[in-house]
Image (cartoon, rainbow, N blue to C red; front, side):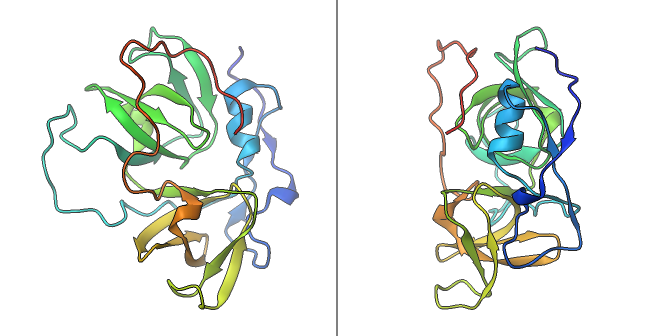
Length: 222
């Protein structure tokens, strides 16, 4: 399939905040529906982009060496470095491109790795290989479910509501504690339930495929 499609501005109904508008808000890129993975991620997530970069690893422990090519733990969280990231069926440039991610800062979980490649899973459950140069350790999250999520002024259910996240919205992750995570978009931040945010889970979010499983079928919206 062609990978150099024209990107169109995201409609205004996909704006992130219900009650607050950020001065740093800008429209997200969009691709035509039916363009496999690019459409799945640009449209189904209903994302909002902002100039702010996602926060660094939340709650990271002291440096520790692991028996992996990167010397880092697997699984671990990361985010996409670019608005164009090729997802491949295997860990080489010769492997088939399964889809193209069109959303910078999208949270992913690294579930396997080689020296130069990372097997990742995304918020829709898709699994593929991407170049390690296309990932960064900064954390972000996607709001889950079909209902808006309250952004609270403190990490407790009785705290004041500052803003609301639309379903399937993208936000930067700062830190988590007591079942809540502090997230932000632009100059607006607040605390949201940790179990409503994909990318804030502790431990594995996706099941690692059997080594003999062939990656090759793009998965639909879930």
